[in-house]
Image (cartoon, rainbow, N blue to C red):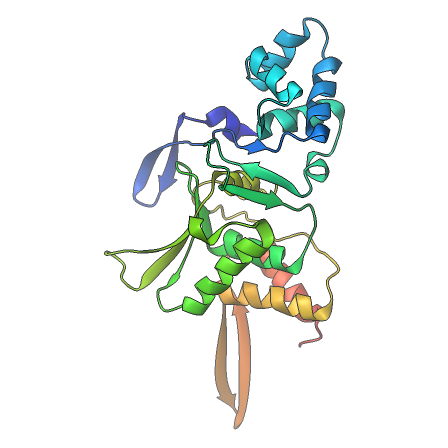
Length: 276
């Protein structure tokens, strides 16, 4: 992943007001040093030609003494080292990480999330909010979603989703207000592991949103779950309109985004549900 290479380096991005300079933060997060994880790192290490220590160390960007600590179980395993080990062995890493705890680089063991390698309606709803309304900060380990300050129920729902899907503790989720924009509030999640997981596993870019965002892959949910997922898309970038024609009241639903693929996915859901 290029973000690992850009950690602590400066990048420039173009805005309507001109170019801006950002320092990238993408330092390692860590996973539980389980017997299974140690074996994968050990097998990847042993698969390297001689001198194994130097080659595997260069590949992972870690000192060989640290690698010994990963294999012996003394140290938490960096996610980057685990991913590279899986790629060396031709193993699907996210399947191996199912129900694994992810930690930040701090010594605070309460700052963890839990990754579950399964598709669920709640995951899709949360990803819709993050892709369409969210932002993964490029310089800080935070995720934010901004809405009208009066949307208390919306913020409450999102906090529950972060906890249900990734087990993010509510103590690391804050509601932030802006003096310059008093009508807007931002839900901010302080979690380096979650930010890195959203980028690596779900391909959500750091920084401002690209116009080439992609919808979630099609999955065979039941009707009620499709309605809930569709509702999250309408709630983010959609709108309702009512008008009269020939004394008949008509209701319209619209969904507006730069991504044609995302718009088509919303249209296909409406069509699949049998609405004209």
